[in-house]
Amino acid sequence: MQSLAEQLAARIARGGPVTVADFMHEAVTHYYANRDPFGRQGDFTTAPEVSQMFGELIGLWCIMVWQMMGAPDKVVLAELGPGRGTLMNDLLRAAGVVPAFVKAADIRLVETSPHLVALQRQTLSGRDVQWCESFDQVPDGPLIVIANELFDALPIRQFIRQDGQWRERMVGLDGDAFCFITGPATEPDLPPELLATAPDGAIVETCDDGRALAAGLGKRLNRQPGFALIVDYGHGRSGTGDTLQAVRHHRFHPVLDQPGLADITAHVDFQALAASAVPARAWGPVDQSDFLRALGIETRAHLLAQAGGDKVAADVMGQLRRLIDPGEMGTLFKALALASPHFPAPPGFVS
Image (cartoon, rainbow, N blue to C red; front, side, top):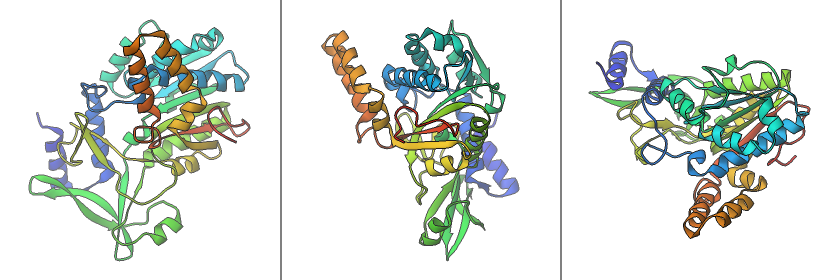
């Protein structure tokens, strides 16, 4: 059986170079279909795997926005890209302090990987949960959406400026190895002032799938009441720079080497997501540290630390630092909220 690298090489040999987005799509789809990438034994660790506090505070956020919606008897609670199910499990446990919310929640997990669905079933055993393969399958009604570290894994296109023209960056072959090459001239869909001032050699990125998903969320939130919370790493405003990266066994890995065996991601352009979500209203992005502090993570950490011995206290305070310190996840990771236009600022965001 051919490896993904062999399949991609044969495809390029037959039809010519592919876009970065096509290469990334194939690599990411293969990667998530075949493994549990999370935690110490995997390739990377997400905030829900760092500490229960993250999911607990997201649960608190969900309760508060549900109350802002008038506490409807039925609310669709959807998580996009739910990993092992850890975040949803912690969210629901914390939300148990308001039984009416848990009773109202119609829980939908949007997941395409059968391997991860199996893990989510284990984590959420005993919970009334249903699965969807796309956001379009999420049923109508009042809505709360959570997406933690989803958008960074969606395929991006890259463009490089050469001799005053923008050209799409492609993936070709140099012998048996994959390599970046310059493709046809084309104008990226980015703010004109950014494109006009970028020097030769500059690289910009767009994420068509991310924008399409944000647009779908925006249309839904304009039609029916609700909120969406997007937490990911990236930049608040569109800019230049090559952010494509791969990680394997918690170490950086060459992006084009052994596709499908490493986690490939890129920084999220929060400005582009917010613009795509119109007519929904966007709040933020704010740094993850500011968002979690506003929800009371420091108070929660001290309560957990006091409930255990010295070892537990040290672990909890280490988790807190990982989530909010600028040198860890505190500022690189950001939170963006989308909401139906008539709602005020949700918790953690300043109007």
